[in-house]
Length: 277
Ligand SMILES: Cc1cc2nc3c(=O)[nH]c(=O)nc-3n(C[C@H](O)[C@H](O)[C@H](O)COP(=O)(O)OP(=O)(O)OC[C@H]3O[C@@H](n4cnc5c(N)ncnc54)[C@H](O)[C@@H]3O)c2cc1C
Image 1: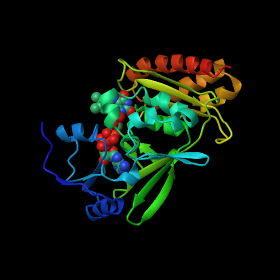
Image 2: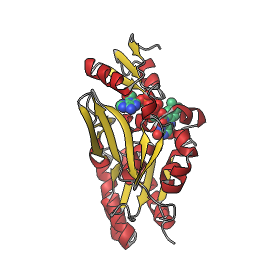
Image 3: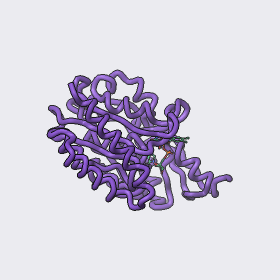
Image 4: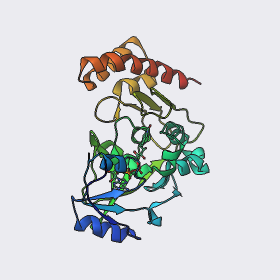
């Protein structure tokens, strides 16, 4: 199939892009890497009337050291993140996660901002940003705001971004390479979206709390209180029962629970094992 008719805009500056988003509020969509949006349009699962291509806007590209955090521009491609020494040194968990995203061709075009804005519950990047305590920077022609990742993912492929906002960057507290972490997922084939995944990010100087995230189940990646407790007290029989209860409550059909629950439980044991010195 081919997409429904749309008007294509390619602004050269962020203010011009924001003016278009404000003018066509609701009818306009941002085009970043196009790796998800173009197939969705081709299948007519979405029909934006106006497409605002942000690929010429240099201000949205690149990774900057901003003290205790790294600021990653929304239009930074997965492949650039994988190559960046700053990420290898200060956010190795993010590189590990992105190595699981799709294949080379998609990683060469797909962007961190596109993945966060899409908010797929099985995607690695939103889940990892949740584990890393990220802050999302959104801008509209009225100004800029920062949204905690805890409030950003609102439901299935739905975020706190307003219709006229562009996600401009994500700010992530640095996490030194020597601090342990665990990233584990199960996918049917290499490069597929995860059937289920677990991320453990123990507290460190920059983030005062243990963060554990389960993704690939339910409508959005979410923190697991059971696993966060287990990161301090061990994965006891009580902790396993609590995790089982959490996962069963998230998956609302029996068939899905029968398939995914054993995967999550196995990943949880393996992930906890990775944190041991
Ligand atoms: C075959 C295939 C396999 C894939 N496998 C995986 C996988 O295993 N794991 C995974 O995580 N992903 C996977 N993906 C998706 C890929 O990671 C996409 O690149 C990503 O989800 C979207 O990024 P994008 O830059 O291409 O965004 P686009 O497709 O351009 O946009 C996606 C959505 O986000 C919005 N958007 C984009 N940028 C912004 C912004 N800056 N501000 C506001 N809204 C914005 C768009 O309007 C659109 O609604 C796969 C894709 C394909 C085609």
